[in-house]
Length: 101
Image (cartoon, rainbow, N blue to C red; front, side):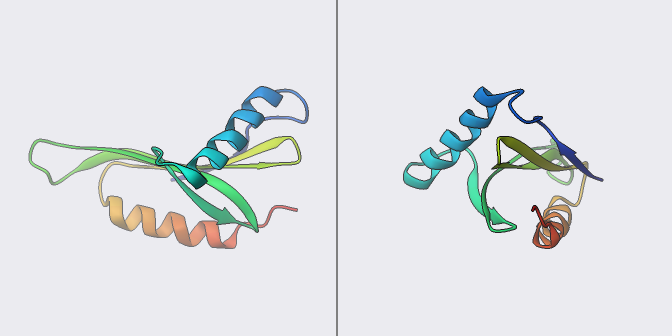
């Protein structure tokens, strides 16, 4: 399942907007927990979290992308219970189709 949402309204959460911008800048020059990707021509922060079961066959987790633009944060996320690689691949394909104007 892919969820799509606009996280922050204009000027309603500038500190979170600034936090995401700073996270992106920091990750460009330092190691960080996520990665920087480009979505619709904008730098974005991508974070993936997963756990594996004891039998190492199933993983639970999510991958989210936060895109700061015009004092808004656009966030896309996918949650998975198995087939992590396939879910991430499809999520990445989806992100290639995103257009933010």
